[in-house]
Length: 178
Image (tube, rainbow, N blue to C red; front, top):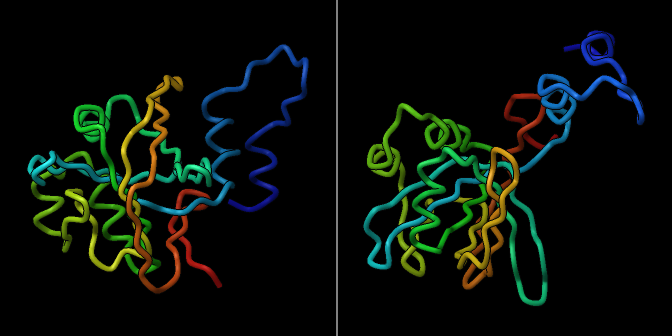
């Protein structure tokens, strides 16, 4: 969408305006906030019952102790599994892993199929995607309501760094660094 079209599509919202912000306007504006692309994964203590989902709302929360924040849709099957295991891994995707982001975001692809078609290994009992740009194995500290999402805070127990450049999500499309 060109700048002129974008400006016409979303009217400015002024403080004190009587018109509430619509979901469409909100999504249009936030589509312009670039973010990294991750896959959140979890499993039972023995590595069974793996689940995973694509997430772009992930960030660092604290250095001391090391903590992250991640948001997941309340209807997510993976969120339900994360709640039951109390653990998650954050897999930061590389620029050539858009296919993994799509696979783990597709509600038509079952959890078993997601992992069967994705090279992965266990780190601290959690599924970590092979060749991820980086990964963190975490223990969930708290889950907070956030509208139609749940905000998870988690302590980082282990981590690893691969090589390459990140996959980005901006304006409803995958992007790479120039």
